[in-house]
Image 1 (cartoon, rainbow, N blue to C red):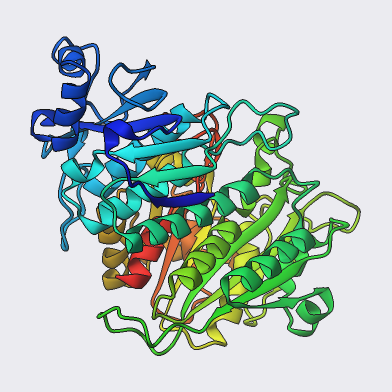
Image 2: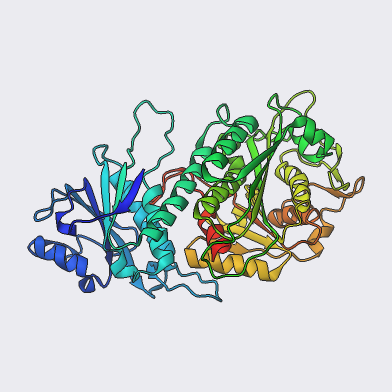
Length: 511
């Protein structure tokens, strides 16, 4: 995919589709004013008559627009600054808001425009204009818009003989600096990687094939990849992770991704000399084991490796952007299957840390994988740890399907992540980590058990389980079970993988 600046005047742009941003204060937009003049006032009349709406992500398509060279004009709404849910807000540095940020609306609006454009397979070149008029060239918002333009046209129909969509081959942008164009492209393409991995079926994506993907991505982007095979995992006493994989014919893997950082970067922020550790759950298929899932619950369990894919996507973007901060990424890769030798309810496992675990539910397997991977992360003396996991349905019950659950042992780290997510426009919200939740995972036969007491607070007791393996290192757990995978499409994203939290963590690492 080519992403570059557009050179001719907007009205002379002969792209297959021109995607025009439309804010509520459209009358003050030089781009719209000029295009409206070229269209003999037709554009303003449609807006004033309510035929075209300025609300966020509302789109309108005009074929063969009179007065313009573009074959199609697609208008996409941005809303109004400071109008709550229907508009934008400027980023802030100390608050978490329930009002969509400028960057969040920009990302989704550009993605919505690209998605509409992709529905006609003849639209090989698309151009974006007018966004700078409403985003006031704010860097994070413009970068987010570019990333959205890259990801929006990508669908989940990887294996259809005839795809329903055709993403553009060339994306042109007006009024965006070359730096923001290239960084937005790197982030957007890294999100496409995450989405593709999540959307791949389990007969195509399994522990070893994920490793092959990681090796190829590392070679392309410029970071090192180390792989622990089953023999190494046994030697390292990763017994908790190994127990989950016992029922599968696909052997487990642990993949370690090392990005050394770029001390020569022009970023002005201070960095941790120690790496930041990013840990991902990589259950490439989850049957539930002997705590077997029903058919409907199992059908989308190819997405249970979204945490691992997210870590790989973040490492790719960070390396291409040459951010200053060193990063160590660790992903535990297993299949959770049923077999005569599979993990059973009542088994007692001895994790790599030496802690013993009673298995009370074989479908609470992700935390067993992460228990050992978090312990391996400590070997690299990270300054802080962030883990990503499609961990619990309970988090979806608590927060819905569009919000990431955030749980941490460090208030400063948690607040930093929440503020960054708010500013880039990704939805995240904290859940309490009161000490008494730890009592609910206390074991009777072993040190701890892998589920809490009953159904209540399941997302929190899962996080308290993970907390047992971070050795009081500053740590934040992101339960991405809801937003990592869409059952049905949205205006800005097809059903399937979403690459949630890639933009947030890249902003956090490179701020």
